[in-house]
Length: 194
Image (tube, rainbow, N blue to C red; front, side, top):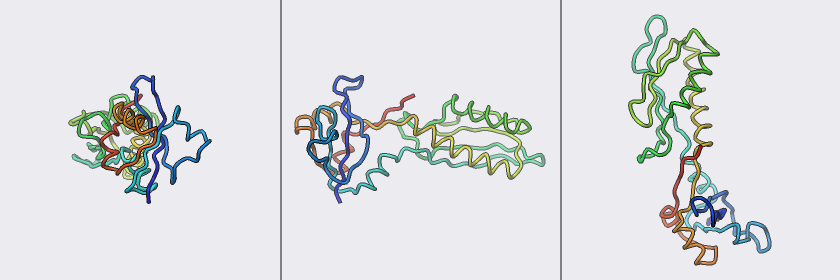
């Protein structure tokens, strides 16, 4: 059942932290590149499988929920809430940015200029309100496009890090530490990158 988290070291880096790069079923064998503690540390998670840890590290992907809050009228004009259910409470990860929504609007309006997609606003960190004229088929395609764009944007922007204090603890243990997922979560952080 245990899973090993491979952590790339940045001992003199900008954050003096470590970046989890992958999960392994077992400790790296002596002599391989991943066993070099000058470059990598490991954290053996005693109560999670490799599959569970991989899913945990990917858990900040957008989970998009879309709903029409006004319309459609006879011409197909509708106002839409686009919300990321996985945005974090501290508002540092998972929110819609003007840059993201502008790129989606520009691409959509180039493909369907009759839609006239516009932004109405951002009523909360995790929600983008927009409006446009859609046929039923276009609305379904728009929903699929939003879900895909949201997932891609998050993958580019999310980076898990082991805190500097956590890296110090692992270093003091010879670059190899073991604990539960709850203990790991105390030293795991995320950072929005661009």
